[in-house]
Image (cartoon, rainbow, N blue to C red; front, side):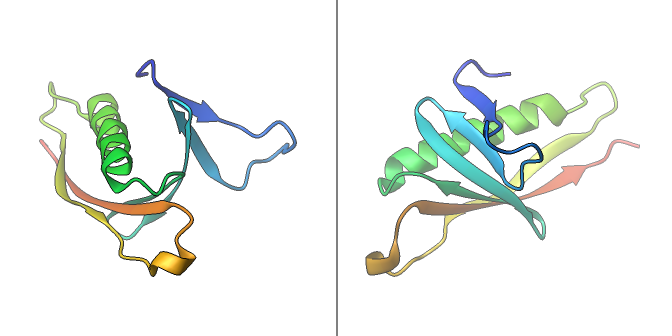
Amino acid sequence: MHDNIKFFIPKDETIPTALLLYVGDVLVRYERIHGGFRFYIDTKDEVKAMEIAEKITQQMKLEHDESQHGVSWRTLSLEIVPQEERYKIDTIIDWKYRVRDGY
């Protein structure tokens, strides 16, 4: 796993109900959506958030690509989800991908 990305399990939860990562010191909540993942990145800085999302998606592709079988994850889009500024508490980014199957 990438040195800067750490899976996080809250100490006060026996069965975690959220998927959490730390990328450096930034908390990222994420969930599956149709055709990809949604990341809730704990920063309002959209440039920083996009850099973090790119690190996460690169790592996910690296861990799940199987070149010997021809399986590869292809990014279709990596986009910031528009939010009304007065309600914005984090940056939301959707990653859509497809898996190219070698078999």
